[in-house]
Amino acid sequence: MREGKYLGLTICVVLLLMCETTLGRFVVEKNSLRVTSPQSLKETYECAIGNFGVPQYGGTLAGAVVYPKSNQKACTSFTDDVSFNFKSGAGLPVFLLVDRGDCYFTLKAWNAQKAGAAAILVADDRPEPLITMDSPEEGHARSDYLQNISIPSALITQSLGEAIKTALQKPEMVKVNLDWREALPHPDDRVEYEFWTNSNDECGPKCDNQKQFVKDFKGVAQILEKKGYTQFTPHYITWYCPEAFIFSKQCKSQCINNGRYCAPDPDEDFGRGYDGKDVVVQNLRQACFFKVANESGKPWLWWDYVTDFAIRCPIKEEKYTKECAEDVIASLGVDVKKIRECVGDTEADVENPVLKAEQKAQIGKGARGDVTILPTLIINNRQYRGKLDKGTVLKAICSGFEETTEPVICLRDGIETNECMENNGGCWIDKASNITACRDTFRGRVCQCPIVQGVKFFGDGYKHCEASGVLRCGLNNGGCWKDSQQGRTYSACIDNRTKGCKCPPGFRGDGVKNCEDIDECEEKIACQCPDCKCKNTWGSYECQCGSDLLYIREHDACISKDARPGVGWGFVWLIVLGLAASGGIAYAFYKYRIRTYMDSEIRAIMAQYMPLDNQAEVASQGLNRNVV
Image (cartoon, rainbow, N blue to C red; front, side, top):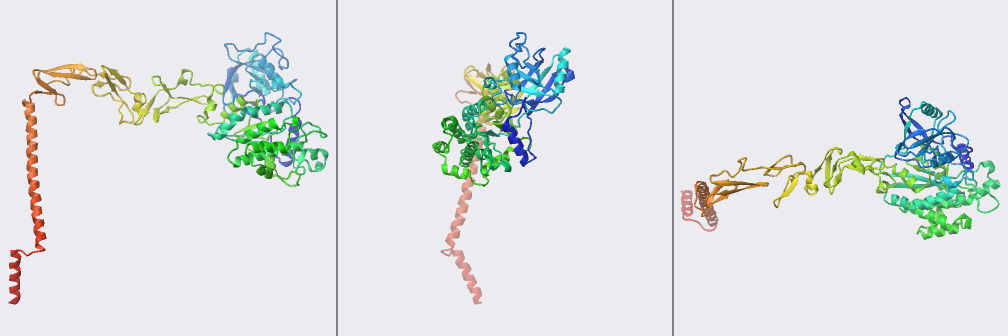
């Protein structure tokens, strides 16, 4: 866990939780350490992430290992000896290898950082599984350097440490790559994270740092939550008082609901100031605030409440009260009555459903271990390790997004390095229109043909991307050839085709990089009529007929200006007259058929109303036959 003894709070929480369940456990968070040289050590190893400094979540860091000849435990400053300057200069960053023991892990890291090391590797001094290096108890180390440690740290096994030292003595250069890309899961486009915290603001530097973090991170957290990029949940650690001590002074002052939910006394003095039970009630009130705000669809208000409460209701000003808390709640427009109902009767001998759920959540499940350290961040069900500040935590959250789904805030300068800036990331680019297939991501970059202004590009993303769709000609001319000369513009992009380029009439070429003018005159493919004079132009040609004749481009023929037909024109007129005659005959036949039809219809109608002569004769003959 750390050099020296555990925090008293950590021991109490662990032991009491173990009384309730045997499933809980502490999980050591790890990342990868890959040795790239020498060949004898070339392999990937596990190392434990320190709970301080700045792990490069989502990234990697390469360096060369240095093991000092003296001060090998790094318990004193290297700056006293000018020969120990680990700044890399033009070479690889220096990873300082030191031995475990004699001082706190954080002091070793601070001394390594001051000497210019880019990272610190601590070799264990005993053959055991990897442990988590933690910061020391409050009061045992100066806070002025704890929050200033900015290099990553890793604990390696005793056997790996000895192997590296042996290689360095030969001497051989030992080059390693620290890799945090898989330190946190990144399954999809939403990150789920929890913040295990405490309303107590009088616990020393850790509490001060926690308050500052909440204040600084509030804006970022609310943006991510409002836009649906994250799902955030605050949590609070409590424990129960053993039944044998429920009526003791300690449990009565530190617990509520008959010893079920307890917290340590803020000033560790049971005779004055606020008690542990006051902290439990305020923790419960903050948890209830989140519950009510979340049910109203505004979970991000929790950040406003906690920030304002820390400012308006501090312990040292004796404002750490229910009345002050409810004033803050009312100012944020949240129903105070609902909060009171959620808090319930803290003196009653009953379970509180909110705190009961919190105690259950403390127990680790799956890949996540027990929560035993305050404050603790859990990102995608994995405990975060490192310094608690805005930039470092945001990097960790950004590493929890699936590749290419991270929000814009994760791609800002200072959060990650834009790998598309150098050589376009090795991806395809159309420099003329500044369209690129390089897409920057938090972990690096991907080469992916883009979609620009509704036009989708297809290809491998590395060497080729081609626009497709009916709108493609409006975007960099669809990637096709286009040129203007002599007041004319020609394009190889065809609007009614979804892809491909084709040189326009009068040109030949691939349609992408070039289209060359065809000389119709020299190639004798136009203006070949008698007495014609041909002149080539860019993309076309001009043809003139001799005498007073006119050139007809469609027929590549000449006709006289006064319309006296030559051989070609007479043939045209013959066709026209023939069509006209055929039309006249067809019209006459049509008129005849219409008239015949109309006559027959008229006769049929008249026969219904007046007998015709032949009808009378037929009737008379029929009557005579009947008489006979």
